[in-house]
Every structure is written in C-alpha cells, then in structure tokens.
Image 1: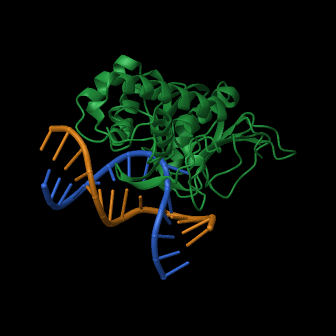
Image 2 (image 1 turned 90 degrees about the horizontal axis):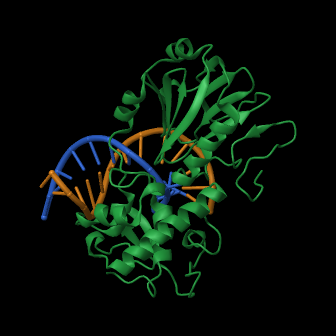
Length: 285
DNA sequence: GCTCATGTTCCCCT
DNA sequence: CAGGGGAACATGAG
C-alpha cells in the first residue's frame, strides 16, 4: 500500500485512503497526526454525516453512540486543526477531537469499507471516515465548542513547527532536567515524541541527557535547525523518518550503528523512554 | 512464556 | 513545586 511518498493512493476496488495501509506500525507523533489532518482536509471537509457507527463505545468520551449520532446527523464537516499530537475538526459548531496515543489512524473509504480495528465510523454522504486503533489506547471526544476542546487537551506548549530559535531558548532556559525530557514535555512544546526527539538530538549532535538549560548559543542553533529539518522531512514523508539515514532506522537492527560514523549506538532510558544515541558524536553537555 | 513498543496519566520519591 | 522513576493502560510482534 505504501507509495513511497506518504501520500495515499487508490488500491483497486478497496478505495481507502489512510496514508500508509499500516496500523500497528503507525507512529502517532506530530508528523503522523499532521498526515491525518491533511486527509481530513482533502477528503472529509464539506461532507455531511448520514450516520455514526461505534463498534467500540469504550473509546468514545463525552457522549454515547446514540448521542454522537443525534449530535452529528445531517451536519457538515468543517476544517480540521492540529496542535501537537491532538487533532480536532468542527462539525457545524460541534468539535470532534481525536488522540491516538500509541497506535491508531484515520481512514477515508469511498466506497465505504469496514476494517477489524474500526472503533468509531462516520458514515458520510460520500464515503466513510473511520477512527482505527489496534491497542485501543486513544480516544474520540465530542466537544460542544473550542473552549471545551482546550479543556480536553489540557495545557499545551506551542506547536513544535512554530517554535522559533528565540522561543526555544526561552522555553529551555527555566528547565532543570534533561534536554530530551524537556523536548518531549507536551506542556512545554507540543508534538515531539520519542522517535522524533532521538532523530532531532542525533542530527544536532546533542546527548539526550544534556542539561536542558545549559546549551551554548551554537548548540541552540543546531537544535533549532534540527527540529525544523526533522519535522519538515517527517511531515513530507507522512511519518517519522526511519530510513537508513536516520537514527530511528537503526533501532530494529541487531547491531545498530550511527549512520554518519558507524559507531555502535548506545541506548538507555531518558525521560522514561528508551533512547538511542551515538556515543562518539553526542557528548553530554 | 518472556520482553518490548511510537503516548499519557497517576502515584511515589527526591 | 519541578522533575525522575515506575506502573498502568491494551494489544501485538518478536
């Protein structure tokens, strides 16, 4: 199903578009959620809801299957919004809010087609939109307005795509812990997850356990540029880069090595997550 | 059977 | 209070 561009393509008579065809392998960091947002904007905005099916009511928050159907029937999808790993879309004033946690995706199918892991399905006047999730950790909320959306998401820092170099410096200045845990803190900067941060730090040649507030000006420059480059590349690809030129492309190998210098990668827990880095190039600050 | 997994939340500890 | 560490959540892969 992959076409190498991250863009969906038609697949014979089963015309579903979900950016990947995968499910368990989807990495719901900023780039993946941005892909879902673009799918909504391209296929779902302007469509009207005919009905709602909820194969797994456990994942529905703030309403019931019946309540969701009553609230949305006959209403029209508006423009989607993403902030960090959160995604929401107006439906005639109401808001549907999606979060994927560790797995999940959105799929647009026309003609309609069902899938084993469909949890909430919006039957549209043309096609269906399905929230899919294998591990059932994510949720779908119905909110009455934008204010309620903010309550659901909780406090979020600026989206990682919109943090400038000076903003980054300000955000990190007051931080006492490690650089990696700061970058993954959604209240500080929204959208970066474990794999994006490992790629960013590797590209910036900074150790994940570096003290967040102790970066020198040159290191801040490198970090800011690495965030921009990794996000642009991963959004373009539609997923977190995992090719041979990225550190996360090494993780599945028996003996992961640095794609730049060939040194055996080091790993350990930083910020509560398994982290990988090049011990030769990423020195602790 | 075992361990590990991209995220978040909660609880305990320093 | 800020941050670290661990467990929990649910399911599948290796």
